[in-house]
Length: 150
Image 1 (cartoon, rainbow, N blue to C red):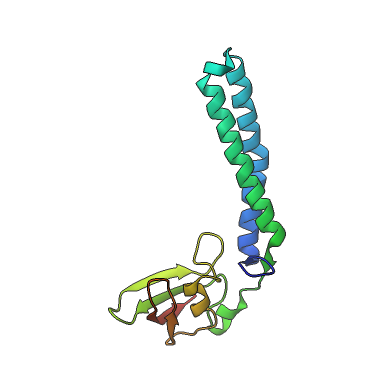
Image 2: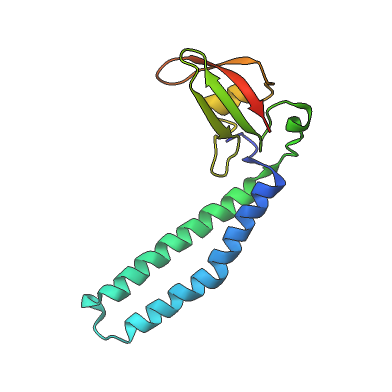
């Protein structure tokens, strides 16, 4: 994370907002109904369905809290770097490790990808096809060449 917040493209922010809306609406209502149904089964101290539904409710509410916080702190970036061939937040990048040529594709994203604030994400930001970057990793530095950016 940056000091100012998590860098997201507009599309990534929209995905988080859609997930939050789903959790706060239909998913929350579904769990409330499950708790209500489980309560009707009687003795709560031995009611597995009730305890499972309450646990699921706790997990749901935690995820909602996390999403709200991420969206509150989000800094929307335009992701325009990829338009001029540079790696930016939102870019899909293919790299080849310098030592063995093994390729991997990564998305620079705080939402289900390689964070722009990670060693790999930070090393790739601003790079162009053909550039070689050095990634400072906990197990030692390694080098990779940028094969493609889209």
